[in-house]
Image (cartoon, rainbow, N blue to C red; front, top):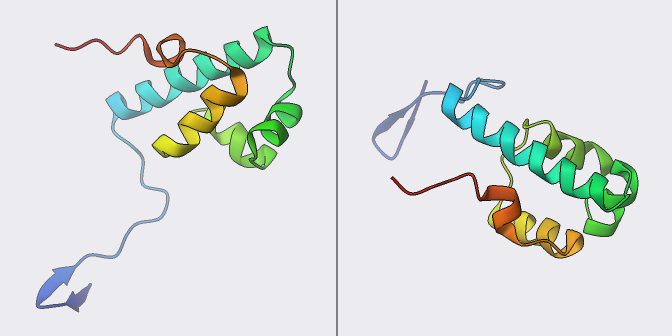
Length: 94
């Protein structure tokens, strides 16, 4: 623990797991991205290069291990030439 601007700060625990709901979303988004990539005939390595990512980073996206930024999501949608609803359309307002 550390004091920072009069606040007690707990150290970030490396590798802490996400809650089940977050993990479910990341896995579903990754599965949908993978399906769209395969439908277009790209290998992971080819597509990572097209989208501007390392293959290892891109693999973590598809496997739900990486919570990507909106900007990286847009890069993937543009590189796949896909409607974002194809990837995240399962998310419905309550």
